[in-house]
Image (cartoon, rainbow, N blue to C red; front, side):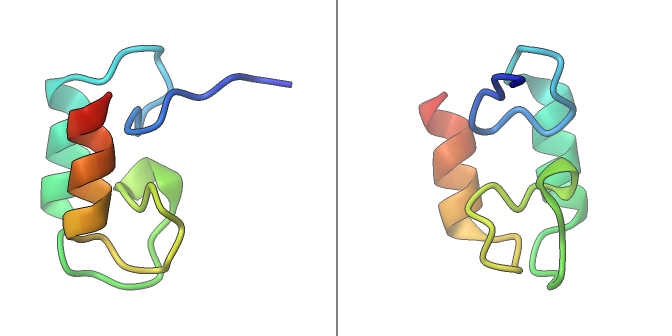
Length: 56
C-alpha cells in the first residue's frame, strides 16, 4: 500500500508549490481527482481542499 500525504497532488512525498498549482488550476471545478486537487474526494476542488493542503 502506497502512503499518500494529504495535499500532495503529484504524490512525490512533498506538499509544495506544484501541488498548489494543481489545486489552483482546477479551483471550482467538479468531478476532479486527487491529482487535480480534490483532496477531500467530494467531487469539487475548493476551500476544504485548500485547507487540507495547507495543513500538510
